[in-house]
Amino acid sequence: MKNLNYLPGILSIMIVFIVSCSAPKSDNATTTEAKEVNENNDGHQSYKVDTETSTIEWIGTKVSGYHSGTVKIKSGELIVDNNAITGGNFIMDMSTIVATGPKDLKEEMNKKLTGHLRSADFFDVEKFPEATFTITGVKTFSGVINEQDDLRQESISKYKVNNPTHTVSGNLTMKGITKNIEFPAGITFNENSVEATAKFNINRKQWDIVYPGQPDDLVKDDIHLGILLKASK
Image (cartoon, rainbow, N blue to C red):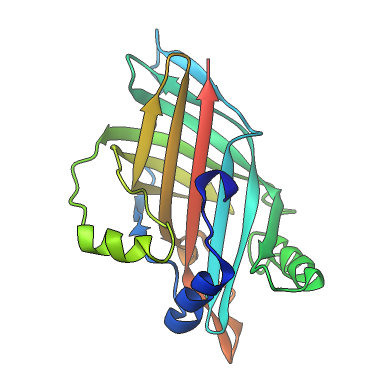
């Protein structure tokens, strides 16, 4: 994700995926059943998500390597009260999901994978054209950061929020299935805007994305998401 300085040089990233054959070392989102959404936002300020500067990047892995790409945000808002996010949501336009990497992969292969991702094997975009995330809770981050892990990752790439400020939970709906996920995030407030960054892994099978891949090149269960939201009054 270019706005997050998300992908390093091709040599470093190939070392990560070819050697480990697993999702990027990142925070794993805690997944539970869907939670109730607080609809009472009287007197709170709505910040509109800028769909041009906000970005979502995904990374999927398989035995032989990895693929990366993006999906566009269709719309969204963050509800703010006294420099605190109290709610909000954003909608992903799944018809825009594309495969763009690795950089050395031929363009026709990326186009082929893009079509496959949009098919019923993966996100079934024709039947489920949108995915949504609705905030159910935001609290001050109180976790423990393993500095050794962060230092080791810094020498490879950046797949974690280095200094999380908050823990965010919300209902993620894909393919008609809603689960609540919780993950660390970095949130900053300015006079008329707010910016939120999150980087975490989810298990695709929780949302009925179960395509196994080829027998000799199985697809890993974890999908990495890097999200940057920019919103303003």
